[in-house]
Every structure is written in structure tokens, then in C-alpha cells.
Length: 135
Image: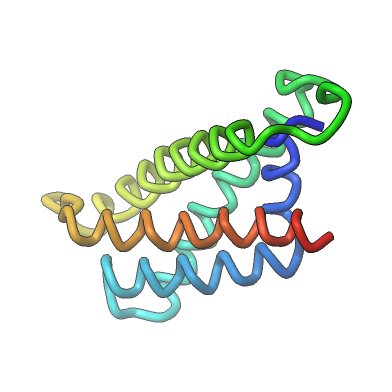
């Protein structure tokens, strides 16, 4: 399995998924609003969209069936981590933007809020990498 396919699979692990939702919920609550139920719904929709897209890409076979013999080099894992971070941020920030603009039409991402959400997303993907390493 390629490093990207492995990271995508590990983001769906129950423990990783629960920790990711908690970490990203806090970032959404901090950056976008202070309402528990609204931010939870927004986080679940955004994470569900990025997870579904990742699992669909993995299931499509676009990432290949098997990796080269032997362990993947470190730069392959780093590239997979960065690619998954970029893809998840694009999908989740797009979904959150749509949801926020429905509530407040003039809403825009602040740089600081985007940085906080990117850091939370990076932590979530790092949790998936640690899960892979510990398994």
C-alpha cells in the first residue's frame, strides 16, 4: 500500500477519527463561533466530506494496489502527509466556508483562524501517521 493510501486508511481508524474530530472541533469553535452544537455539526460535515473523498480516492484504485517491495522512504511519507494535509484543508475549508456564508454572508477566513484550523488538521493527520507507526 502506498504511503498516501495508508494515511487515508488510518484517518478512518476510530481512535484517530475521534481525536481528529475533537481537535478540529476545538479549532472550529475557536475560529468560527462559540456555539457547541453548531460547531460540532460543521466539524462533522467538513470531516465527513474530506474522509469520504479520501476513502473514495483510495477505493478507486487511483493510488495503486501495492507499493514497491520494502518500506517506503521517508520522503514518500512526508509527501503523502503534505498532500493529505493540502487536500483535507481544501475540502474542509471549502465546506466550512459554504456553511459559514449561509449563516453570515459577509464572512471570510482570517489568516489567524485559517492557521489555527490548519494546525488542527496537521495534528489530525499526524495522529494517523503515529497510528500507522504504532500498529
